Length: 367
Image (cartoon, rainbow, N blue to C red):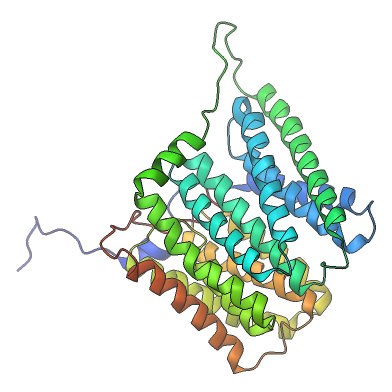
């Protein structure tokens, strides 16, 4: 017998893989792509040319943060983002080759990311992009041979140049968008973005849910960075990367969402291997960029599916320079399972009574 007042059972498949109805973030993708291209071009001025990617990554990160806010706030947010990304990228590059310092820096970045996410959407965006940039720089410095071929001084110079390029893109974009927006009344007060530090420090002193989330993420990521610095092999790198992809979205997710996130990461790794068999090596980087940008654009509309695309793009970008994406054995998949399991264990075994924050997954680079 049916009861009219009986609540409908939640459709797990629709909740995980259905559309949220939110628009795609193509403006963010356009800003990121512009920063990558222009930043890399500026970074190529300094020798050696292979270090140009540092400037491109930083410029893209700064520009992407500025794309997600109103024109009146874009410059203020971009300045804060430029400082945060420059510090994160510099820490990643300077600590390359020093495994204990790398692990400590990774832990600090993880905690700061969660604290920033607790302040609101702007802090969440800055934290996500900053931590993603940190891992990309740290990974490329090791596996793509940037360090020590590109000296620390040259790397820091490119990072500073990338910050300047990103700020320039945001300034031009904000002016253009302001012209298309409704005019601001002359009597309107200028909008000021409050500092993120007071609420972050208050959260840290109270050791609240945001701080505990940061510690949950910091422990496995720091251990992964330490293992990668000590072992230096591909296995250690893949274990760390899998854990990072799963833990990149801040906050404790519901169990079903966490499992879907792990599954999408594992499936993403398998698909990357299949893509590598069919796509020439020269096109792997381009494929990774496309997947990353598509994942970012649809991160809020299809969180799990876009998360899988983002994971595949990140793995391709990190692994393609080594030339070993396609030369897998069974242990490559095992590395991914180990890293994902470590991330899952940290999420649900540390402070297990903390409630899940969201009923839906969050895109790694979403606001």
